[in-house]
Length: 463
Image (cartoon, rainbow, N blue to C red; front, side):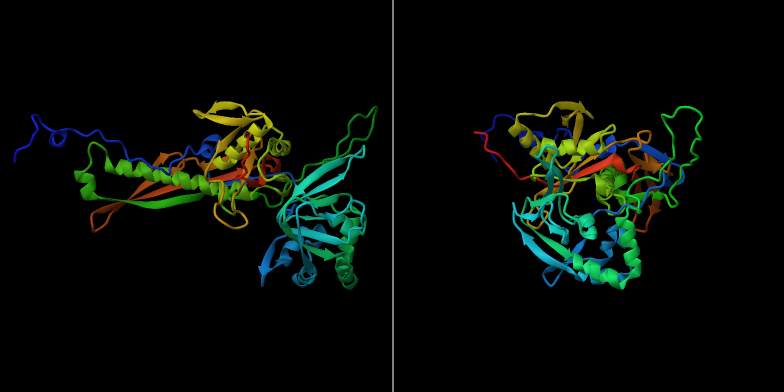
């Protein structure tokens, strides 16, 4: 075969050349800032017990609902969030739940007016509203923004008193409300309920979430009798057991024997598997329904985004919740981008600081760590285009959030992660058990807060 070439071509020459290869690349690897930012506590026994000073029972400030034949209904058992219904029986709660009726509202609609007699207990099924009251000098003051599942008007509804604030809808939504006559009718038939309501209205019930008091004396003069006291502890402190992410890695002996250079096949497979395990670990530490941080934010530490998009005001509200040594915000990258847009719109660009070897946005000196493990669903549905922003204090000495891992495990290849040879089967395949042990704990309630219902799809015209 004749060609027009007068020298050796690249296609033929590369048959004699050595190829420079990379290790296998993996798109799913992220910086995993949460794992890097948390201080890790080495747990000796596999169980980490968080002892606390005794605290009065605190619910999640939400009354859950479900859809029945296209209409929202209160879940009866969740009415125990109301302090004087904590010990009510299921039949009674079912009757009260049946007394709620549905109501739709539009943006700007006033749901209740300040000073009007509280005729209803309201539960927001879907939507967002704000509580406002008249300030000291006659101006309007914003008390709180409330959203899905939250209820309002309980104290005034129970006592039959005027509403101390007005509630106005910020978005379209649906609410359920129960008339006061429903409660009065049930009280007439149930003496135990009447006693519980009377104790509540008399102020005999301790405020939920407060700690048992320590009697002290201060500022006194002379020889006074000092109070006697002691500090009570929780009877059943929470215990965190090591959870895990786990898989079996399989390597055929023929592959390990013949194709082991220049890269060790077993080591390369293990490195990629470790990366996947750590990614799953971070996901579980945020989203697991039992111990995930997003599911362990106390009721009083939840903030609703007032206008939807995350604004400097919203992040300041979070900082007011975790004001003692706040360490990090944690948010989806799209939420951080949305926050940057709101800052640009207001002419207050956030400062960029270098942490963990990367430039990161900060607000009030607190870094915003990006993580794609924070849910930010696309597509359709109620939660589409919304996410959450977490703020936390970290460290055991600061009574913050800590990561947990075993002090040592057999065949450990990284802290808390083992790779155990399980032997070879009849097909010549060696299997390795890859296990990452971990957990996370919130030591006190004010160590963490979350901004909810954050919208990430708002854009502005700067022209």
